[in-house]
Image 1 (cartoon, protein in one colour):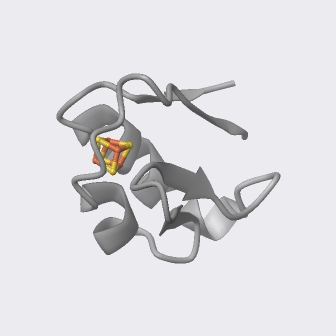
Image 2: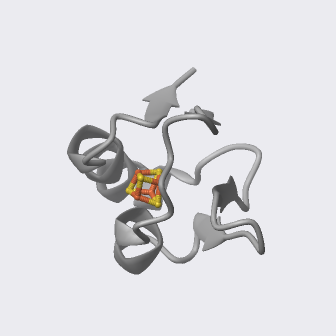
Length: 62
Ligand code: SF4
């Protein structure tokens, strides 16, 4: 599972980082970065929830 960030949609609210800090990290430019290339299986459920609940629909799964 890979995560895509639409940088034009992310407003840097930090919700996804708060939910899954092992995977999401806020960049200096206030746009979220993905810390892993492939999401480990044990985090996939949390990541899916973060993707679904991003208030600006900036995240998607590849
Ligand atoms: S929840 Fe969405 S808008 Fe908020 S920081 Fe994460 S990707 Fe950006």
